[in-house]
Length: 234
Image 1 (tube, rainbow, N blue to C red):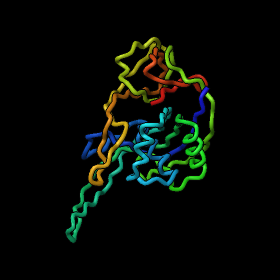
Image 2: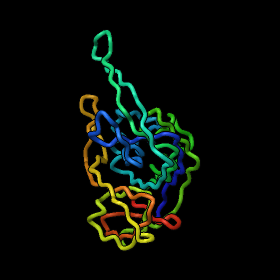
Image 3: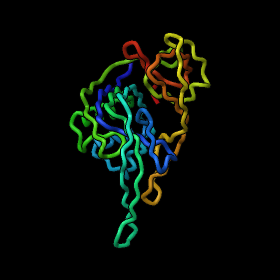
């Protein structure tokens, strides 16, 4: 058995920009690992420029399930200051997830795990997922004990998995219905180069929507069971 943190969180409006979407910022359905690590870093009072965040990227595993009530587009204004008296102004559309409920699982070595747990209960900075203004409410945080599953059949729903689902045999889909799965290539961490964040360590992900599917995983991946669903950690 292993100790994990389980977080129940609610966000009114949250967005997670899909890379390379420029004039229209479409959003992922769920936050990426980098967003969740950023939230925990904020709880601990760690600045984005701190090298400790890179340690967290490498030594923390997370998993998530979540649902969104609806999506909408908001018009936002950007001000770019380049030293001149008047800023350069541009506008773009940003897609937002509205009324979001997330269950987040965090796994790491016990000392760091308990440190994160205490800070999540008494955070240094306001907690957000997405942009800094997209505040979330932690409804409950607890430490749970779960067996780490390394292989065998798992059942997943409303989640993101760290591989292309097309590479695996789908054993079962509830009611025989299936919708197209969306794959992306995303970073698992960021490095700092001349005060700019640069994405690194890319990997494939697939979003699973509001259906239940059963697949077989191998020892390359780790999952846990919580109730009637399994969650893959990355």
